[in-house]
Length: 180
Figure (cartoon, helix red, strand yellow):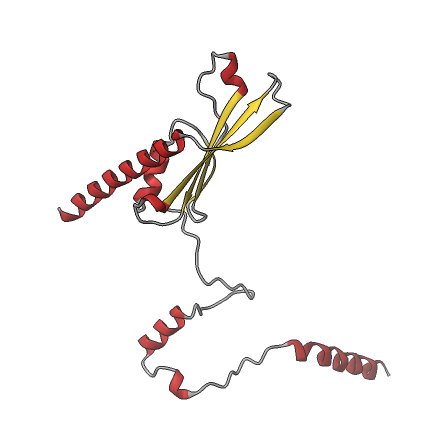
């Protein structure tokens, strides 16, 4: 009786589990699969296929190494006077920390700026980046009562122009190195 009980349970469990399994044998047209191994490898790479361990699917990578992008490098160099709260190359954004111009002036401690640079393209063009400036004005020294506003000023255009000029110089320098 004990063996029958175990067999019935095993049968029930297998009936529940087996339908959830995927069919490992896909029927495809032989004309769709290249005969040459090199071509099959190239097709599998283009389709994002590969070996997955424990069911993990990874069809691409996040590349956080941006030394070849002159626009990114120029932005980092132009904004090196302030620390960053977010610098994500793969996300295409740079965000500085809040900063003020002169720490000795009481009024400057009440006004702080934050710069955000969005990368819309890898090309060095005026519409390839967007510079946004936020202003935080606090009414007291404890900085508990503050207003934050997005501002339009010449500072944003000046930073954008400085980044574009620096990026053009970096690209020119890179091209000169590759010619040698």
